[in-house]
Image (cartoon, rainbow, N blue to C red; front, side):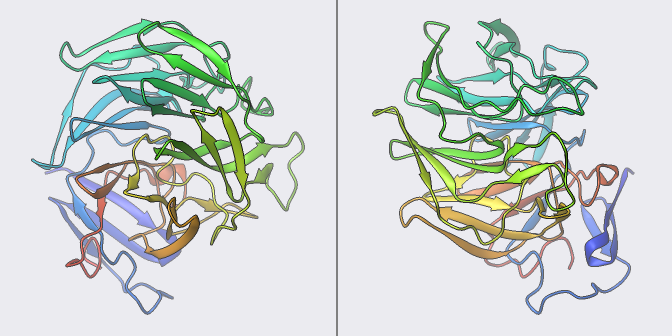
Amino acid sequence: MRTITCFARQFGAYAVVMAGAVILNAPVAGAPSDAPGKGWKKFADIPKPAIGMTTVVLNNKIHVLGGSESDAHQVYDPASNSWTLKAPLPESEGIGWGMAAVSRGKIYLFGGGYGKQWRGDEKAWVYDPAADKWSPIAPMPIRRMQGTVVTAGNAIYIIGGHQGTQKTSREEEIKATYKYDPLKNSYTRVADMPESGIFIVSTYYKGNIYVVPGVERTVRKPTDAGQGYIWADGLLKYNAAKDVWTKLNIRRPLRSTWIVTQQSSNVAIGSKLYLPGGGTPPDRRRTDLVFYYDMDQEKFVEVGRLPRVRCCAGGGVVNGKLYIVGGFYNSTGDLCSETWAYPFPDAPSCCGK
């Protein structure tokens, strides 16, 4: 029997996951009166947990692509609550922090950082699920990682991120936006972003692409206040038909980055774009807060808490449920296999709490 151990330091609890059950050895110290994780349920563990993976939803299944030093291609089927492994990513050293989207029944994967290096790449690939095969496509005009790609109509828009020339210098943030045409296998530059952004949560809704960066940019000389980041607030909206960007200066309930739905192509339920977890300024402290941006009402709304703090995961919406996979809790040593899903009104709390 395989046992997966995870630590939830912020809540002062130690959890052991065994055969789908979670047992806590101590009560949660300092927990809010409403139980953390209300409305969440736990499902089958991911076979190969990682951070920095990219996730897409295709045919009601969640494809988890790579991660830091991982070439795994893992697929979760909510209907059967099961995982399968598909053809690995085309770079054996792994692709972390890539950007992926679905178009015409295929998965398109752009850029990312390969292996242990912190250098973005311009390579791009397409995955055919019928053949279970990856094939190269035209490389991007600019190498990048930790941005986002969004399908809008018949095009895929490549937005934000940075070039990542080396791990200690990540100041090459990118405002240039490109539109990729899968039929022509070509790129066209469109309007630049009004400001840069990395660690992005995004979606396409009613003719607009919504972009919520965790960080606007990094700085060459980190400070105690920002830990090397210029933290983002508000969000960006791109009208694809008019080729126009707009900055929406709407305050978030909490500025945060490494949100667990970043690097994910489908994390909106209707008009609500979900932004759970991650790290917060000034010291990157992990958070369990869950909020969403309502794209119809143009406001951020708090809705509760995650079962535990969680960071750098992936996610996807299938049949009105938001699934969170992989990532870690407080540090990269806290890799976790748990799969959570929300909302479940009949679940008072997740994972045995």
